[in-house]
Length: 240
Image (cartoon, rainbow, N blue to C red; front, top):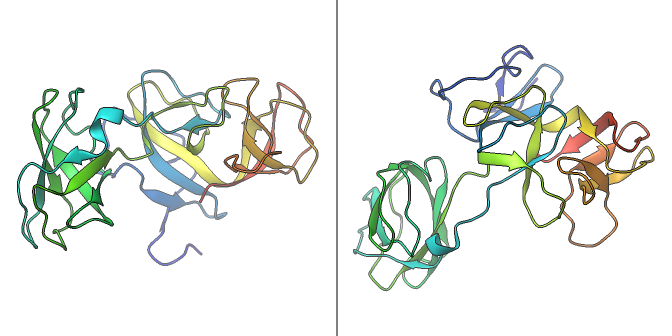
């Protein structure tokens, strides 16, 4: 049985593509009847291939550590910030978060429900999915974080990204679907792997996994089957 608050769905539902969210929030977590975990995602600018590891989109540096442009009282559900030298598209941060990273109100992240587009170096008003708990002033500073499962891409050959899961079917660029994050799954092997090997992002082939051998490497899961280089082998994902 799924845990409290976890939705259970069929494997058929998890192998689908859609050009709309159909009312599902980005990042929603569900389980199938075997306890395998999945997150609802939006593909970035390229298709996501089955069995290939994905990672979160790169954080926008000019949307970090930015000024809160207007005071906001406890209980209100909007925060206005001044963007750096990068524009924001409509709802780029929907289902993501705004983190108050310095000065009054610091230490709290709020979920974003949506916002309009805004040009670079102008004010952006984000609407929150929850009310402000500590009043903000124009001395406060904030950072915008998109949902890790929004605009996801196939992993590059480095280990400096946040793993987000593996699709079980092709998810077309710009469309919505499900990434597996927990349990038995097929994954592209970047090297020969022994059963029980702890896995991380592959550094030789995009979208692959390899043995974790250094402190600080992001952990993806564990090899269930002996891995053959360039083949898709069984792994036990542990991202959720």
